[in-house]
Amino acid sequence: MNYRHAFHAGNFADVLKHAVLAQCFAHLKKKDKAFRYIDTHAGIGAYDLTSEEALRNPEWEGGIARVIAADKPAPVAEALTPLLDVVAAMNPDGLKAYPGSPELAARLLRGQDRIQLCELHPADAKTLDKRYVRDARVKVEARDGYKALKSVVPPREKRGVVLIDPPFEHRDEMAHMAEAVRSALPKWPTGTWIFWRPLKDLWASERFDVGLAEWLFEEELATPEKLLRADLWIRDLESEGKLAGAGVVVINPPYTLEKQLLALLPWLAETLAQGEGAGWRLDGCATDESLSVEEF
Image (cartoon, rainbow, N blue to C red; front, side, top):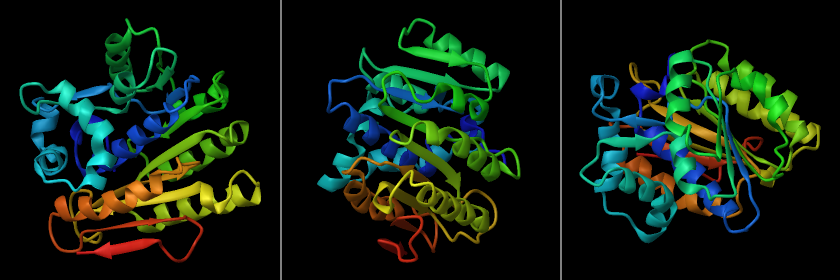
């Protein structure tokens, strides 16, 4: 699987991932103290929805475009507001651009906060650096984000978020994620860590989720209430072709996030469904019983 960001910007997986990330930023901003955002696979920062890559298969039409157009109950609107405010600010004349995680951070973080971006792809790293060269809050490094993690945590601010969102170009990407977290997380167990993964190889994703939970509990780095898994699928996960599902595992989520996702996930599954079998789940990774699972 190759999931380079430019080809999928604004799709259903981005909407869920960025809604979660934006809510983590909003929670951290409730205190005046500075925090840091660390992105291991930053991409190019923001995406042109009129570009050749985006138009080749405009997944954003079934993602962020549907979300913007749909009626939103108050709890859903609350969960989406930080993300949709950024999208609106980028698109005064109609939907033509979508924020990657770096741009979301650049627009939502404050002057005292810091943004640390890693991108190994040479061309993408140059684009990223050019985009933020005038932003003193942002540091861009053309390096392997997995290898960088151990040296960049804990950040000086002692507060913040790590996003691990690789392109899944390698068959053993889950193993790389697991290796990176085992080496770095013990140095900063109080940070918020977000892991994005596709729901394509269900055996691999379940193995990663449960293995992560068991390791965290064995090492006493987290307790069950500090671990949250949120998944969304827009059609039957066994269907052939394009990615049908994706989600995040969050260590040390904001205490408000579970309630927000309980409102958001069923609405997203219904609004973004592309056939029978769309659904969602929200649970603690190490438990057998989900808080909620529903299919349409």
